[in-house]
Length: 168
Image (cartoon, rainbow, N blue to C red):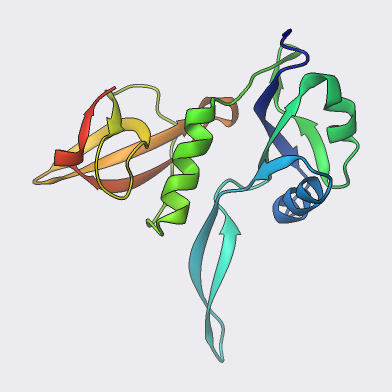
């Protein structure tokens, strides 16, 4: 199967504050889409409320064939498919799966500066089993694990028990 017809995850750059809108519309059209979200506590003058916001501002991920790229870009709210030098770079399935696992387990995520250095690891046990990333630092029994998305040059970090981590 040629790359043009294979289904891969790609990062979509969206209009400001359209991440969830784009995700919902793609899913309604039968296209697998995912926008990692973080729950934040926002305080107004009269109340405090928990709200969900996209982890990566103006980005949504979608799984599609490049032969369908015009249909994707035509979706309301989509500005473009992230590309470099006219090449569309797929996001590895492992990265999307890792983001889904940490999101489903309610792990506190924080945006983190993009990192490409460090030891690549995989979590082998516990609720984050299967998550791949890089160790940023170790403190006692915990390690700060960074999951990087090369295509959008963004990363997130979370704490993980060092006993559950091994070199990938």
